[in-house]
Length: 130
Image (cartoon, rainbow, N blue to C red):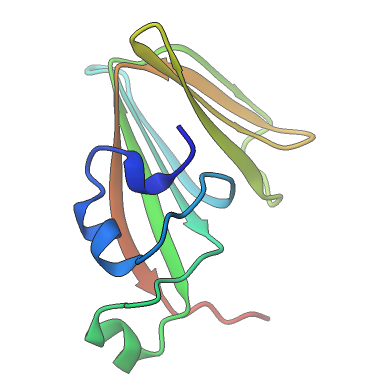
């Protein structure tokens, strides 16, 4: 999978982004693990900002877009050197009916397989670039 736009749950995402947004570098915000279901939810900021943001976003001066991945039926979860301040590169590969989710940099990794990756968001906020 090459674009965030192609994931299930991307209806709102596709309304505010008028072009394909490649899956790639992100700034990790949170990792949530529910052991009972099992579910992993990753939240992160992407470097792209919508060409057609909602009016509220424009009026508020928001400049950063946050999205997430809600992944159910996870297996083979590996997390190494998290938390990290360094950006991660995300990849989503279709492997025989499952998806391998990887978020890596030169020191850290989050990796697992899931049957159902679902895009969450987007939301936006004002990021002071200090």
